[in-house]
Picture 1 (cartoon, rainbow, N blue to C red):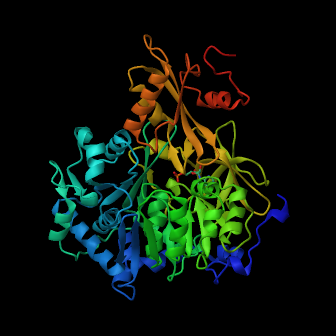
Picture 2 (cartoon, rainbow, N blue to C red; picture 1 turned 30 degrees about the vertical axis):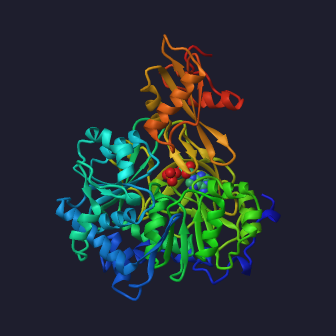
Length: 585
Ligand code: AMP
C-alpha cells in the first residue's frame, strides 16, 4: 500500500497515555499464564471478576450500566446493585431447581433484565445463551432445542409473538420467566413472573466455584450446511476478555464506554457485558435501534470516551450526512473501534474527519470468544487493514495442499486461510454435540477460521472474504441453509438457494432463488407471500430481502445447490469451474 495513506498516530488521537504503546515489547513479554495467575486466587467464575470484586470494593456505588431508552428516564445500576440483582436471579434459578451447567436462554431487547439474567446465570454456574430478539420463531426453537434450554427469560411481547405457539416444539423447556415490558402483562399461562420471583429471592448468594474449563456461554453461529453451530465457551475466557479490553479497546477504569452490539451476538456479550465490567467502567446501553441523530447525541450527552461499534453502523452514519455531527461536540471521545465486517478505508478516514479520531478495525469471531487481530493505539493504522495480532495471539495465513495438509505461508501478500495458534483462553471448546465439525476446524496446532486473508510485510492482516457461503449482513452471520430450509417449508417451493448480494451499507443482503413445484405459477403475489412467509418464520434479521424465481437451480452432480454459481450469475461474474455442474460441462 501507498505509505502516504497510513494514518499516523498523533497526540490528538491519543488523548491520554494508552495502555498499549510498545507492540513488539508487549508481545515478547506477554504470557497467558501470567495474566491467568491474577485471576486464579479468586477462581474463574466470570461474575466474580465482572461484578463481585467491584461490588465488595471501592466501586460499590459506581454506575456499572446506564440503560437508555427513548421514552423512559435513564436507569443507572451500580456495581453494588448489580451484585444484588444477579444474586437474586441466581437464587431464582436455585429455587427452580436449575443445576450447574444447565442452559438458560435469554430472548429480550437490551433491557436491564437481560444483563441481570446473563450475569446471574453465570454466578449460579448455569450456562447462558443470549438470543437475538429479532429472530423469528424458527431460529429460536432450533437454538433452544440444540442447546437443550431449560429456562427461557423473555418479555411478554416476544413470548406472545415468537414462543407461545411453538412452545410444544421445545420439549426441554421447563420454565419461561416473563418480564412485563412497558406495562405489559405477566399473568400468562405456562409462564412465571420474573419480577415476583426476584422480589421473593434473597439478594445474597455464593458464587458457583466454576473451574476455568467449565462451560459459561453458548453462542450460536451459522455454517453453510446443517443446523447452526453452538460454540461452547468457558469461564476461563475471562482472562482474554480482560487482556483484550486493555489492548484493543484501551479501557481505563474512569472510562464511559458504549458498545453498540446486541448481546444476541458474541460482541454484545464479550464486550457489551463482560470486558467493560472487568475493567470497572461505566457502560452505556441503548435499547433503541440505530438512529443517526440519537447516536451522536448519546456520544455527546453521555460523554462517551470509548466507543465500540460496527461498519454497517458507521456506513449508516456516513450516509446520514456530515451536517448532523456538526451539531454535536465529542471532546471526551478518545478511542473508537469497530468489528464484524470489513471496514472500508473511507470509513476510517471519515472517523478522523468527522469525529476527530480514526476508527480502529478489529477482527474476531464467535469461535475465538475475543478480539484476536486489531488496530491498536500501539501502531499506525493502514486503512482497510484489520490490524495486527494482539499479544498472546499467533496468526498465520495457511495454504491448503492437494493431499489435505495445511502449512503456513511465509511470503507476504499471499492469500490463504486465516489461522490462529490454539491456546488462547477464550477459544471455543466445542461445537455443542458435534465433535466432528469441531475437529475439522483444526490442523495440528492451528485453528482454521474459515476466512480468507493476506498478511503484508509489516505484519498487518487484510481481510479477503469468507472461504464458505456464509452471509454477513449488518454484521450478522446468516447460514444460507437455515434460510433455504424455511423457504422449502412453503408448499409452493421445490428448491431454494440463498446467497449474499453485496450492498453498500449492510455489506450483504440475503437474496433467495426459488424454483416452484408443479402446479404453481410465478407471480408478484407469490413472491410477496414467500417474503412474508420467510419473515414470519425467520424474523427480520435473517429473512431474505429479495426473492427471484428460476425454472430450476444449478446443482452439483452430487445434488448440492451451487450457491457460488447463483452468486456469480447474479453479479455478472465469470462462472468459474462448472465441471461438477449437473448436466453441465
Ligand atoms: P461472528 O462469528 O458472527 O462474529 O462473525 C465472524 C466473521 O465476521 C469472521 O469470520 C469474518 O468473516 C467477519 N469479520 C469479523 N470481523 C471482521 C473484520 N474486522 N473485517 C472483516 N471481516 C470481519
